[in-house]
Every structure is written in structure tokens, then in C-alpha cells.
Image 1 (cartoon, rainbow, N blue to C red):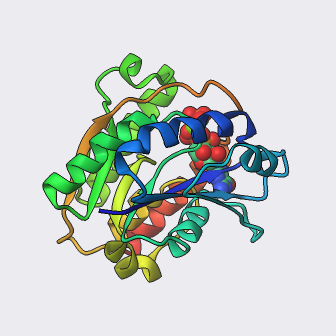
Image 2 (cartoon, helix red, strand yellow; image 1 turned 180 degrees about the vertical axis):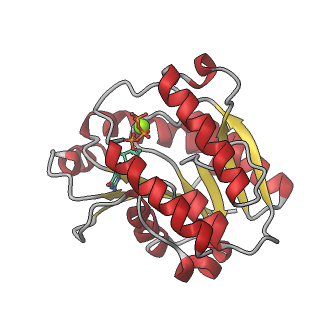
Length: 232
Ligand SMILES: Nc1nc2c(ncn2[C@@H]2O[C@H](COP(=O)(O)OP(=O)(O)OP(=O)(O)O)[C@@H](O)[C@H]2O)c(=O)[nH]1
Ligand SMILES: [Mg+2]
């Protein structure tokens, strides 16, 4: 089974070399059956230079010049340029561990599902490595989302997942395409019949670079939830 791994990045030059190195090491088990696509939102921080110095086989780097800068749009940009039928999305700041890819891929194969979510275990803030405020905000958002959209997912807000390209194609014209929650956007835009599995992943604090999470992103998310509740 072949996979295209899409990694949206914005000003991640401090994480890029380690990320490329770790991914290529971890993905040895996939032989050449994968590609990695970085979608950089025109960071202009030297990320592109770092990429060209450290790039490996099977990796591509796109600079997305379109405005507005946006994570969801960058992911879809990557999906549209992908070669393979199975798509993986993960963050580019090493908060999602490359070593968890194997687990997600195994679950995806075993369950023969349309989506596998790498879910953060939301039992305890120490397990997820989030500060208390972000931990409880995430928990609350997960509960509200499950309630509003009649879902039963442990982590519908996760940014680490696998999706069948067919599943994406079926819903792509219905997507809201704004903000961080591309997984939730896809789930809400898809038929209730799609099969979704979840598997726990390790999640760790960002070590380098800086967070792009801003109050604006939370406001976008609130608008997204209200809009999609009324116009599904
Ligand atoms: N292409 C693109 N990537 C983005 C954009 N905003 C964030 N990203 C990337 O998306 C991933 C998640 O963004 P983060 O800023 O780490 O958000 P977060 O993980 O919720 O926040 P932290 O826990 O503070 O790191 C990272 O790889 C970012 O570089 C964007 O506008 N465009
Ligand atoms: Mg992050």
C-alpha cells in the first residue's frame, strides 16, 4: 500500500532538518512506497533553503503563494498534488512523532477503514503534554463537537490522520476550508457511512520554533462550528 504524507508548515525552519531525517529513518519499513509533500505557506524564514540542504529521496517541497495563509488549504493543496491513493496528514513541528506512523498505518490496513485518527489520549493533561488551559479547552471542544455533529470520536480535532483519497474526493466540494480543523471539516462533509477508526498517539510539546495558534484561530473555529451546524 502506498502513502502520500502531507505536512503543512509555516516558519518551521528549526524543525525541518530533524523532521526529514527522522521521517526517512522511520519510513525505511515502507521501502519506496511513500512520498512526503511539504506545503510551505511562503514562510520566507529560510525553510526552503533548509529543505534543499537536507532533502531525501521521495520528498517534495511546495511553496504555496495563494492568500490567505491557511493550514486546511495547505493540506488540500498537498492532497491535490499527491501521487498515491492513501493520504497521511501530520504537523511539521515534531509534536506528532514520526515513530507513530507505523501504528497508524497498521490500524488503517487492519480495520480497512476510510479514516484513521491519531488521537491524543485526553485522560490527563500530562499524558497529552498540554498546559491545563489548552487541555481543558481541547476537551470541551471535543465534547461540543461530538454533541453538535452527532459523532463519537475521542479526538475529532486531531491533525494526525490517514484518509483514503477516494473519501477526500467525495467530499472536497463541501469543505469549509478555513483554519486548523481539516479532519473535522472532512468528517462533517462526508457521508455518515464512512468508517473511522482511532488509535492513541504520543503527543509532545513543541521544542523548537513557535506556535501559530492564535486567538484568531479559535475564533475561526467557533465560526466554523456554528456555520457547519446550520449548513452541513
Ligand atoms: N502551510 C501552513 N502551515 C501552517 C499554518 N499554520 C500552522 N501551520 C503548520 O501546521 C502545524 C500545526 O501548527 P502549530 O502552530 O504547531 O499549531 P499547534 O500544534 O496547535 O500549536 P502548538 O501546540 O503551540 O505547537 C505546524 O506544522 C505548523 O507549521 C499555515 O497557515 N499554513
Ligand atoms: Mg504544534
